[in-house]
Length: 322
Image 1 (cartoon, rainbow, N blue to C red):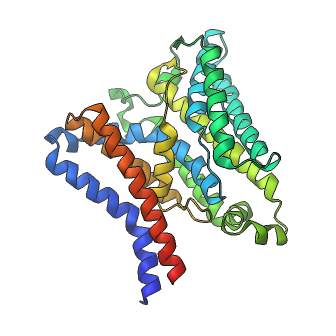
Image 2: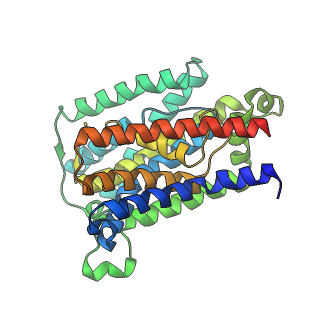
């Protein structure tokens, strides 16, 4: 095996090795409860929200963009679902409407990037504030109570009569969506075009790819997946909360980069993204088990994000050198 193949293999295995290392460290220093099946299940359930949103972010980052508005879309989704349930709308229709709104938010971001030629960072930073403001306005800047429905069970600990499912429905949904995005990226023309635009947009245009339409679609999908993550967040909270998921976009972006995604575009992995999301949850769970203060946890999380971006740069240099 030559040096280039060794580097490629190490890059592909890095997310799994990093997750194993972090988990092992907390297993040694955290209380025994950290390695219990109950805590492992809690980690998996908590990963679902970040993981689903990170699937959409994976598409955006591979395409050479960024989406800072996912946290605000999640908050907006919880408020919309709660208001619709209050109005007597059936849960499934409420979810469909919320996901449609999330898709519209994503398409709006795509239009800002493609039509107005705004930098993705600036466009989505602005929409982050707009969507968060709309969520607060709809909820009158307070939590919105909602009637109990089957949506509350999506991420709840399984009751004895449902133990045959092994994991809550929301976790299975994460697995299904992950498989879908994996297949789309690996085996479809759309996936190939997303990678080609992220790798070299000018070349992609010369090859006939309708770049602007593709970007709008990618941002639309990111918005829809963020809305699905919002459904999971609503299930966990059982209320609409316009202040929830503040800063969650950082965890989502970190999950993609830790998983091997490149902020320069053209590279990303669904498997790596899920491992990255798990790693962020393991870190937060471990810090909580160690009873670290909140400000210490924020420092740890921020350091992980900086390290992830640094490793991304180092990976780029190693690829360019070979």
